[in-house]
Structure formats: structure tokens, C-alpha cells
Amino acid sequence: MDKIIILDFGSQTTQLIGRRIRDLGVYTEIIPGDAPLTDEVLGSKTQAQENAAHVRGIILSGSPESVYTPEGAVPDKRIYTCGLPLLGICYGLQRMTYDQGGLVEPLPAREYGGVGVNITVPPDISNQAVPFLAGFDRSIPLSRIIDQAASSPATAPAPPPSPLILPEGAMFTAWMSHGDTLTRLASGFREYGKSVRGYPAVVIHESKPWFGLQFHPEVTHCERGLEILAAFVFGVCACKAGWTMEYYLEEVRRFLSKRVGANPVLLLISGGVDSTVAGALLLKTLESDQVRLMYIDTGLMRKDETKTVKAALERLGAQRLHIIHGETAFLAALKGLEDPEAKRKAIGDLFITIQEREVARLGLSDAYFLAQGTLYTDLIESGKGVGKKAHLIKSHHNVGTPLVEAKRNAGRIIEPLDRLYKDEVRRLGRLLGVDDEVIRRHPFPGPGLAVRIIGEVTKEKCDILREADAIYIEELKKRGLYDDIWQAFAVLLPIRSVGVAGDVRKYGWVLALRAIVSADGMTADVYPFPMKDLLEIATLITNTVKDIGRVTYDISSKPPATIEWE
Ligand code: XMP
Image (cartoon, rainbow, N blue to C red; front, side, top):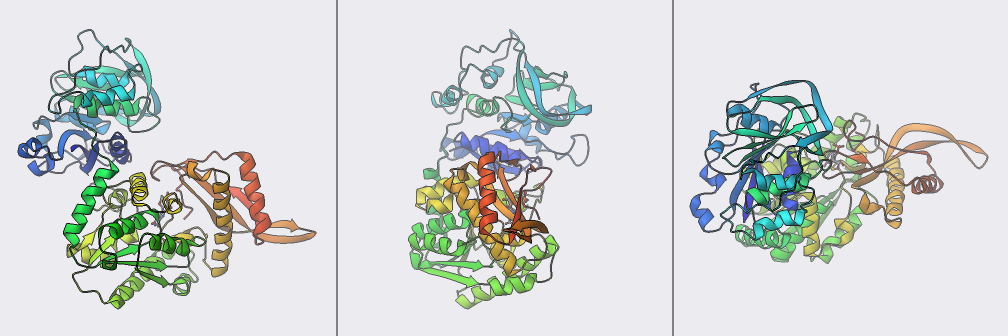
């Protein structure tokens, strides 16, 4: 299977590059920007001959750093001698320029957001440039760009789609975010596009398969972004699309059976899509009495969460499901705590204590494997698995508890979804027959309602919020809005506000509704709620949940706000 390697220099959008290319059906792997490019990483010639998964191109990501400072990570020099096609995006382009003797300097003012780019196609356009520039040509549909590779031998670059009718000076809207620019191109490079402010935006080497973009084609707001990536992946690298869920399922099942043998596997279930799909995968691959499932109900779950998870797993054939009811213990640990981080820590610590106690009670031999539904993004966000340059965004307690660490060190951890993104997990779940209800469920944070009750958490507040949240979600489903939204939930604010019920003056809690659209939770836009639905839902909540007197709608995007309130 063909694959594209992405060198991560720390940009917030590196993940998106991987996502988009996988959407095109080509497997991608993200590795640290300064990772050694060994034979193993690049795929040796023998492997390539055997048609094993091998690398067809390398993308250099963006970065918050500058190439001329020590913080700017430097790729392994082999990148410039290995002969593979290279695509530098933003910092990636600046990196290639700088490493090859060009000049990169700060801009007087950043270029940010939608920026017009003029493309210039000279009459003596190099052969190199034609298949790549097809990505910019509005007359060439994505399907034709993808087909280029299908119709050409995998070893030779695809012939250019002809005719290339990009008009001279064609302008399109790119998405940019940079404070540095190229002030002198490196030798052998030529400029094919300029931003409206006159800075180099598209740069291509005259003889080597090296390409550079000052903008971010991976961002959905970038015009022809997917086509430009496809032009590199299919037109330049001649990749064949071979990455499908069926392929992955077959491969991961083979791996699981071989790795686990007849040993027991304990899977930690959180109630979300990921761990349920991981459970389905284990249950459909191994003997059902080999698979032990453990779920801790913290009492901070959504309405009927435990019931739904239990039913879904039993339908998948789970026989050994260990549910621990921890509500009393968790509420006691949260008593008097108001600070969000203190709440998170209390929950995390107790979670670990209960987990260790309960695992010990199962009396499994040391040979057991610990499985969890960690995703590719979880590993990356926790700074694990992708090396030292990955930015630590938040720590998930399921990625790094002492139990997990101990099993990881003993080489007995299994994370069968760790190469997948969220929507790929959903596709895998459907393939495995997981209930649609579970698969479509919006993400839910580990600390649960505790971070959606601002201030101190009490049982009474949990019950009020659970009820209001359930009405909100149920209404979104009834109105056909649920699947348009990436995550929706209610937040209970520590504010009482005056109202009138009948003729009586009363003080009710204020509830905030949140609904966002997002690709992966890293950035988010506010869901543009139809006003009629919003008003009706708010009325239904205040009429049904007597302790809530007022409802507001949160209209903050991420950034600058986060998705959760705490
Ligand atoms: P934020 O609030 O950081 O949320 O914009 C991004 C995504 O992560 C979820 N989230 C968490 N998940 N433990 C988790 O397991 C946490 O402490 C946590 N905080 C936020 C959030 O629901 C959203 O999907």
C-alpha cells in the first residue's frame, strides 16, 4: 500500500493534512519533523519491489517557529537526497528554501486568513510543474486528478492531465497564516504564484520533484485545497488509493489474533464511540470469554449512558462486562472543589485508584493484555507515539494511567485504533455492526458533567444538568439537527437568576447551551442554530426542568474559547 509521510514541525493543522489525504484513500503517517529518515521509515527498495506499504512522498508541515531560530526543527538531511517528492507547506516551504540556501525573513505584517494568490503559468513551464499545477485549475475536477494515478504505472509519475488551461494570472483564494516569507528563492526553484501583497506563494523546483506552498491547502477554507493535495499525492507521487476500512479491519484482526494468542484481554471502556468500537473489534476477533470489559460509572455521565453502553456491548456478544458504580465515591472526592483543574485531578486520581483495585480483583495473570480505544489524535495530543516535537495539548487520563504505563512498558498494551481518526473509527464501527446510536454519539469528556457544572459539583446539580442535557439532545435528534453538529451539550452556570413562575417570583439556575461544528475538535465554529428551534428548545427546557429559570446560547468559536467551559 502506498503511503505519504508527514513531517510534523508543530503546526496546529498538521493533523488536517493527514486527514485530507486519507480521505483521498491514501494512507498517511505523521512523524516528528526531525525524526531520522532511516531505511525503515522510508521503506527499503526490496520492500518497494515486493509492493509492501511504502513511502511515495513526504510533506513538510507548518510550524509556529521560524527557520532562522534554534527552535525551528530541522529535518534529517536525507530528505534532500532520498529522491522522493517533497511538498513543503508554510514553514515546510521556508525550511526547504532555507536549507537549500535561500533567504527567509520576517514580514512587516502577518498574512492571515483568506488571501488572494495569483498563479502565473509561464510558456516554458517545467514538466515537474504541470501535474502539480493541475490542482489549481478550476476546470479539472478532483476525480480526474485522482484518476491520473490509477491509469499510470505505480513506479512512474503520472502523465499530466491535459490540457492545463489555467489562465495567465489566475487568482484563487488561499488560506494563510505566516509571519515569515521567502525573500530569496533557493537555487533551482521558480515562483509560480504570488500573494496579492506580492509574496511568493507557490514555488516549484525546475528539475527535482520539490514543491512549496506558502498557504495551507489542508484547511477547508482554502480554495481547491483538496485538489492541490490530490495533485501532489496522485499527480506527482503517483500514489494508488488503497486505504479503506475493509483493508484496515482485515489487517488489524490478523495482528490482534497473532499478538494476543489465547491470553485474556482487558479493555477499559469509557462509554464513548472509541472504546465501544475497540470492544466490538475484540469481540469479533477473539473468543468472547477472552475479552474482559471494564467500565467505571463515575456518576458524572449523561442520562442513561451506562444502560446504552451495556446494551450495545451485550448486543455485540460481550459476556464478561464488569461495571463499577462509583457515583458516591466520585461525588465525595469532588465535594468542596471549585477549580476545574482540581476537579479534573480529583476525578483522575480516584479513577486510577478504582481502576487498580478492580483490575486486581479480577485476578488476571500477568500475561493479560490491556486494550484501550486510543485514537491517533489522542496519542498526538498526549505527546505519545509521535516523538518529542508533538505539542502536549491536554492529558487524557486513559492514555497515561500508571496501569496503562506499566502495561505499555511491559509491551502488553493493545490500542487497535491508534492509527485511526474519529470518523474512520465511526466507519469501522459501522462495519463491525455497532449500534448507530453509539456511533453517532457526540464526544464526551472523561471528567464528564463535572466540567460542565461550573463550580462545585453536587448530585442535585448533576441530576438537573443530566435532565436538561437529555432534553436538548433528544430535541436535536427529533429535529434532524444532531448529525449536523459535532458536539452539543448543556452547561450549568453557578448563577441564579430571577424569573416568574405562575404569579410567583422564583430564582432558577442559568443554563448555557453549546453546539459547535468542527472537523476534529481542535478548532470549532458555532453551530448557526435555526432561531425557531433554539427558542422552542429553550422553552421546553425551562418548562420541564423546574430548577432552570433561564437559558442562554454560547456563540464563542474555538479559538479563542475552548469547546468545554472548564
Ligand atoms: P476543548 O474544551 O479543549 O475540547 O476545546 C476539545 C475536545 O476535548 C474534549 N475534552 C476532554 N476530553 N478529558 C477528555 O477526555 C478532558 O479533560 C477534556 N476536556 C475537553 C471536549 O469535550 C472536546 O470534544
